[in-house]
Image 1 (cartoon, rainbow over the protein chains, first blue to last red):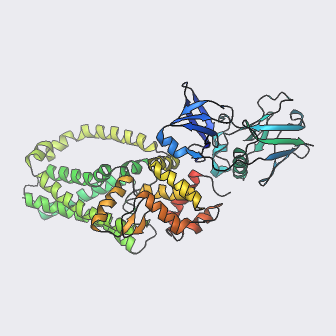
Image 2 (cartoon, rainbow over the protein chains, first blue to last red):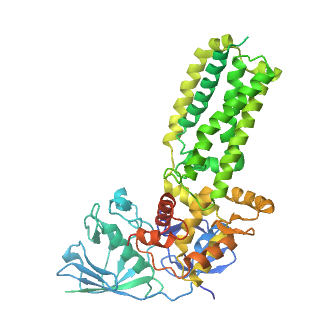
Image 3 (cartoon, rainbow over the protein chains, first blue to last red):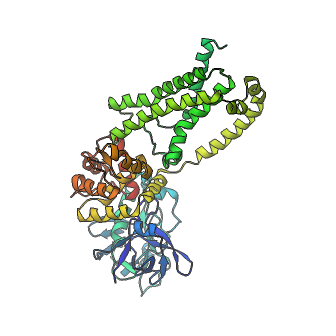
Length: 202
Length: 312
């Protein structure tokens, strides 16, 4: 079965997401790089939260956003140092992260494929002229079968409420760095639900 | 009997009103014959009917109405005056633009297809002059006399017209403030490009190690300048004059090229094995051989940034 992916969604208009109608009439959002299989104009999601859901696209949308998956997706491991609060992203860089130490336990987590765009960020976080990123609405959820994790995300923001917050700095490089991290993560897969591992170490 | 100074006054008033009309829309015209940065210009350039209506209709209406109000008695005089106004208006606008193109003025965006750019201005000069003549003649006909009030009739209606004008300004201001963002203009233009062309850009770029978003950004900017209907007109032009710039990428050729052929040639000639783009300066370097115009490059950079973030 040929695998396709959702492509060409990194523009300022789509901001990494496409809204589609499922075959049972619901509207759902799928992120850039979601893998799908195709039967004419009907598609079936191969990975992520919406796995196995079927949806339709118009010919125009297919022409614009559906491309064959020609290369295998990379696998990456992120490392978070609790003491220094540094997030290490291979081939991308090391970034200081905001979080409350007592809320993050040592261990190996997975970062899940995002399944809806968050609208909690202030508008300025999406403004690339002010140090924001068009991908500010994409938050990456942490998962670990051993711990109960309620709504813990890696995201661009200004303060932490239990999340791992990639700090937004007005007129700084936060948007550019967030894009590097976003692009690396969104093009990576460790399984059909997760983008990457996150090792939390001392 | 009309006196010479009355004719001169009428000519000045008509030219002024035509100027005020275009000024009200704040067009970057005549330097560009299509503008790319606001909703109104985008709306106009989408179809030939809208474009022609925007260029010729105001000239026709203003001349007909002003001549009609003043009841110019002689058909010959009215036609001659209309022609004169048309030619002066087009000299002040299109001809100025032609000179600017000739001297490579920085206020004019030089696009790849300069002969077409020149041709548009020449055709505009001729068509506006003809429109002026027809409007002048029309103002002396019975239907025009029935439709257009006399000076006294006009004064009688002025007060009620003021009220109407206030409403028009009110609605225009609402419309003007509803300008769409550049990103929506870029996205709408991208979606107007035929999907087989978009798919070809992606596939052929991938095969030839070219940046697909750069090719799409150029296609967006060229498509804003030459919408699909305009490129179709170029096909008819090619029947008579073969040499020209063709297709969505406006590649110079001695035979007509469709959009896909122009993309293929552009990638083969200019964008094969281009280095990875990580800054707007990279785009500037890559695009130099294709088009050096600063305004053009800036538009491509903005379209590229719309498609994918740069400066990383």
